[in-house]
Length: 173
Image 1 (cartoon, rainbow, N blue to C red):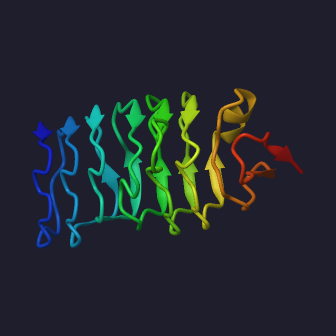
Image 2: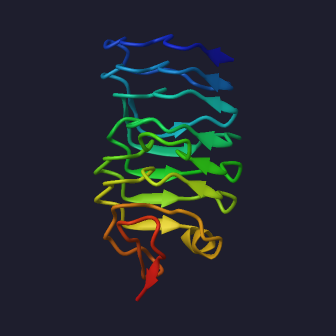
């Protein structure tokens, strides 16, 4: 099933939706659906996700993005209510095409599980996520010299401090 570009764009009265069996979600499909609240976004069949797909919605947790390979660069891609993000093993690219970061300025985000296969994280992907405390699978990204997460000063589980300049090396305590 495909949800086309701007299919529900601006539907402020939309409060819930069944996304079972959805493979593709177009650009701005739920953009501006300010009453749409999703406690746990689980899209086991997802293969394609457009920019601004869930802009201005209220998603608290993303536990399954199916077989998605890339999360586009798009500010507030999943709204600003996201607290936990679990990326599938298929996800190799997070906001690496320039521009805004998909999770940029999300001050509610506390936990991210990167895919062990992620090899590119855009410099603004998690910029200004000031509540981010835990990033799983981060060690693999450090070993691969991947650009990580910018503008964070919080410590993560392995005592690695993420620094504000993504071109600098990550410092260990």
